[in-house]
Length: 596
Image 1 (tube, rainbow, N blue to C red):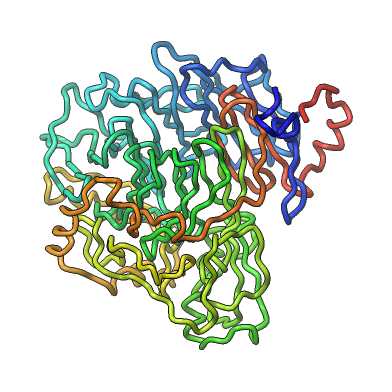
Image 2: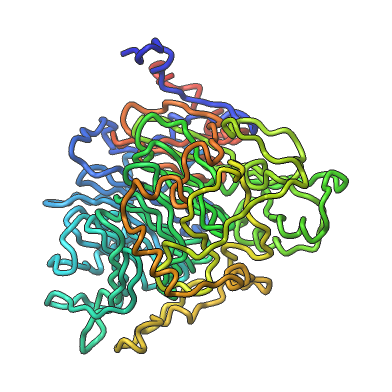
């Protein structure tokens, strides 16, 4: 079937693509699927999802993969680029009746070669805690569907915790659970803890501590996905009402919001340093939002249908040092703009980002790499470069693949207008640097950059400590979440410094909130949702059709990237130079019918 107006070539499924790093190649022998390898009839089924965990196996092959296809859930040893997949030997396989798995997440803190804790969300609203190594089912949450009857859309362990996890539903609600507590035999009763613009948070009113510990009601329609910041302190949520909402998770306060160009937002992710959030959805766009500045700084257009997954590539995101003579500003100006993280692999990511406070004064050229997949069956890769992030600074080298439409960046030394009024979308947040909803000035450069800030948007440091949750609203308000284990202690942690220097009157915020509540027409042209011509428009580095059915997974690993489509095929794409042993041993015996 030829693509419209494009002939056969436009509809060809690609098995390799090239970027500046080299050639990425599909490893046909590393494909995971149901054991019979028959394409799954995806009509009416929930999206195929993939989760990874490393169990520190002494054999050196500690990666494990979990994926759902229809009513089935599989757990395999993941051999990646090293060896061909053996689908005949799943470690665990489960088939569910009356409901389907919709999402899952491993607890990386507790994983060992003998035991892993896997949360699985279901289409009927339940959440199951299983151990696919021991083949045990330890607990079922919301079993009687007394807490929420709608589909589970996302489930994640709270970073740094061995027992707390967060679940979102198609109802628009999120619930905080503790695996040690029961859900009770009656429907929970709630008491208001905090309320703001289009969100409220309730505690569970009970004589004894029970699940859920907290209930969040966010926006209108389904809450499609959420993601914790790298330091675990902030939570980004995207909803069917088209809003990105970013909360301070510990304080249960709204930090900032963004509105899609149109339609719902379906997916969200954080940059490795917590400074930027990318969201995608039904407007076919990827939107880059600045955590520090609380505003859209770029959009990317490459997909022809809804964007289903966005993800940053921690291993390709890079910094290049430049000649100090190329920088024309003061040392103080430059220090405000420096971002320190390198090309190392990463557990890598957390340790290298902590170097941002280095006294090294050489200029850096930063490139964030992220990717997206969509219902158009296409994979797009994007580079977010310093000409978008800092357009008022002289570039250290020529950039490509970035279209700032007809706007040009102001020359070095030009005056940059930055807006820092009260946040029109902030509820009970005090002291956060969040811009308001004033219409964008016609004099504002379309590639306007972040204002200078010495702080960072999300330092990598502590995780939430697993602790007992006290009863009573007064004790419960803190959730004991501030008692964090310093698992990755960073003495230079400065996240709070970036948020505490701007404040506004609560009354002013509330007045603004009532004026701009939910009318999408009134948000277009504001900082919530700039017009297309008011922000830079990114072009993808590559945009390739890689599947027959809509894509539902994109995960970046050290040696490869992993994609999955609704037919139930999980594909491994070797990074440049990483094909290695698998290629030499197995590609010679590759079947002649390999898709090209």
